[in-house]
Image 1 (cartoon, one colour):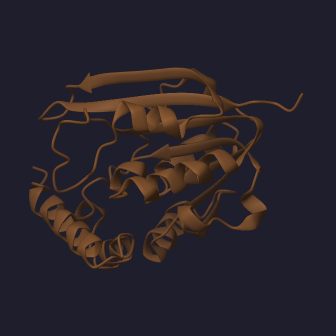
Image 2: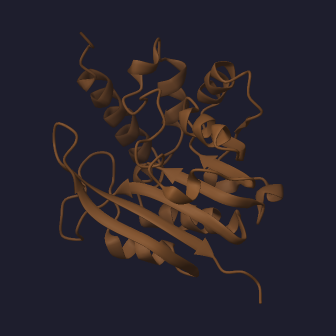
Image 3: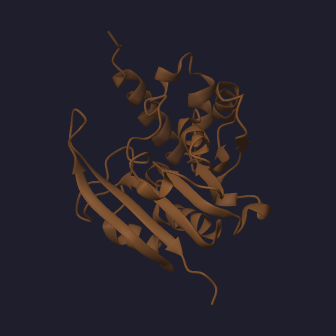
Length: 224
C-alpha cells in the first residue's frame, strides 16, 4: 500500500509560507528536493508525464525545440523527447536537475538549473514550444507571476506554442496557504499578445478533492 503523502504536502506548505514571509519565495524548492530521501517526499512528483500534457493533440509529435519549465524529476521532458521534440528542461532546484539528468541519462534532453524570472539570454525567442505546469501557482504574488508570464512569452519563437496548466480561483475566493491559484483574468492577461487557441477552465474531480484547473494553449504571432 502506498504511504500517505499528506505529511509531505504539509511540509511543502510550511516551507513555501516561511520562504514567502522571509522575502525569498523561490529558495525553498532546493531545500525540499535536497532533503527528499525518495521522490514521494516531493508531493507533486508523480514520476509520470502530466496527464493533461499527454492529451494535447498539438504535442503528439514535433521536430522543433521545446522548453520545459520547472521540470522536477523530468517526466514531462522525457515524454516530449519521446515524441520527437528537442528538449531543454530546467528547474530552480539543482537537486531536482541532477536527479532528472540521472533518471534520463540515456536521452538527448538538456537539463539545466535556471530561474524562470532570470532566464539565460540565449533562450530568448528560441523555442517552438514552452511547457509550464504548476509553476505559476507557486509564485505568491502578482508581480512575480507577471514576470513569469513575460518570460514564458519571451522564450517563444514567432509561431511558437505555449502550454499552461495551473490552478484557478475566483477573485473573491480565499487564496489559501499554498499553492496560490490564479484568477481567470490573471491568466488571460498573462497570455496577452498571443493567439489563444484553448482556455479550458474546469473542475477536475479525478483527485480526492475537486480542483479547479486551467489548460491554456496559445501561439505567438508570426512576424508579418
